[in-house]
Image 1 (cartoon, rainbow, N blue to C red):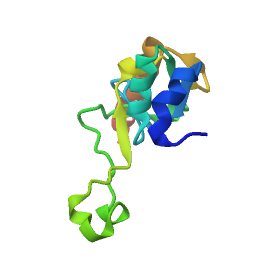
Image 2 (cartoon, rainbow, N blue to C red; image 1 turned 180 degrees about the vertical axis):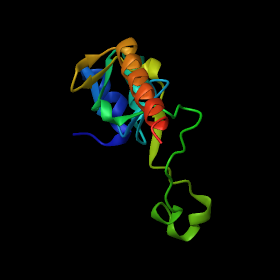
Image 3 (tube, helix red, strand yellow; image 1 turned 135 degrees about the vertical axis):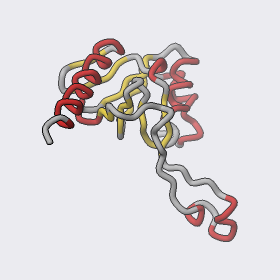
Image 4 (tube, rainbow, N blue to C red; image 1 turned 30 degrees about the vertical axis):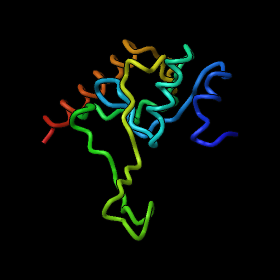
Length: 132
């Protein structure tokens, strides 16, 4: 176990990086706890694979990196006395080009195979809109 601040040191010694995901966006970007993007950058810098473990039900087929709104909480959690001066964003967006693969219930999917799953979800959403 290491602290978040030691992440790049740990990645340098690791075989790969495996994280979870709260959402997979239509442009293959991943929404997860703040710090995930930094882990992906460290993995890239150290030439390590960066894998995301998430069921395909985590796909948000109607959102992408530009339309996704990240959840923030009160700055009081960071510094109660100066809460208005504190950002407290809980999630970040990791660009899809930093993801080596998606570990899903369908197996490990590379970018093109995950893109096909996203298209499947988009088709489902479109067909459901027509059922009114």
